[in-house]
Every structure is written in structure tokens, then in C-alpha cells.
Image (cartoon, rainbow, N blue to C red; front, top):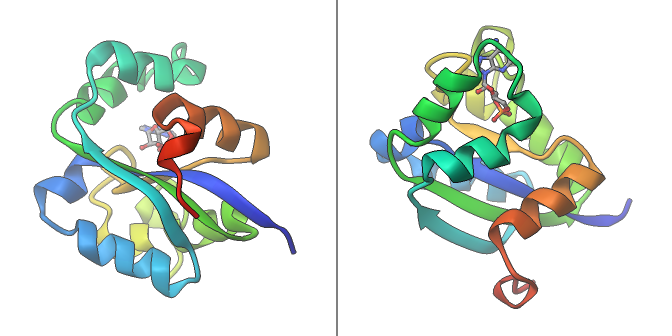
Amino acid sequence: MSVERTLSMIKPDATRRNITGKVIDRLETAGLRVVAQRRIQLTKERAEEFYGVHKERPFFKDLVSFMTSGPIVVQVLEGDNAIALNREVMGATNPAEAAEGTIRKEFAESIEANSVHGSDGPDTASQEISFFFSSDEIVG
Ligand code: CMP
């Protein structure tokens, strides 16, 4: 196993319900360490840039609108196999398909308001981490 870092976002549906601590508890209990964290309000431009890979998808406009509808918490998580581990702890994108015990099964409201985002691979993780954090903001 190798120590990895991954980008995590706690989405507006979770900040609105004041459950960021509950989400972070799930991450930490699973063995992930929060090595950088900031609560921010995404602008439309930044949300469109972050989700640029999805810009041709039918849900893109609604996704940007949702992600700018309230504050989010951006984090860098570190741990053994952190990228896959975080995806396992989050559960499937669609909460209707998420396994028992996962964050999305327990907290997500819909496929759009699905409480958390996590990088899907090593290249995306490094791109997404540098989208939000400089190296001196990450303290392992
Ligand atoms: P996330 O992991 O942040 O990456 C893209 C997001 O688009 C995804 O989580 C969902 O919240 C959102 N989304 C909305 N509708 C869909 C859909 N039909 N298929 C996949 N993702 C969707």
C-alpha cells in the first residue's frame, strides 16, 4: 500500500444541514487524515472550471448551480490508498445505489446533492488538490 493524497469536498447540502463534522468523522474513522481544509463559497466561474470535464453533460448547469448554492468544505485527505479508500467510504455517486454504511447512503439527498466529492484517480487527485491548495497549506 502507498500513502496517497486525494481531494475531498463536502457539498452545500451537507454544510446547509450542519453535518460537516459527521462527514469528517466518517472519513477519519476510516483511516483518512485531514491534512488541509478550508470552508469556501465557490463562484460560478470556479465551479465551471473545476467540473470542466462534465461541461457537455446534461446535468452540468444544475451541478454548477448546486455547487454554488452555499458553502463547501474543501479538504486534502491523506492515507494508505487514500483515493480508493475515500471512494469506498463515500459510496456510489447515486445514493440509491450506495452501499450500507457509506456517507452517501446515510447523508446524500440525491445524485446531485450527494454530500461529498472525491478524486477518481491519481492524476485527477493531484490536479484537484492544486486547484484549491498550495503545497505550503498542506500539513501532513
Ligand atoms: P461528483 O463526484 O462531485 O462529480 C460530478 C457530480 O455530478 C457528481 O458527483 C454528482 O453529484 C453530479 N451529478 C448530477 N447528476 C448526475 C448524473 N446523472 N450522473 C452523474 N453525476 C451527476
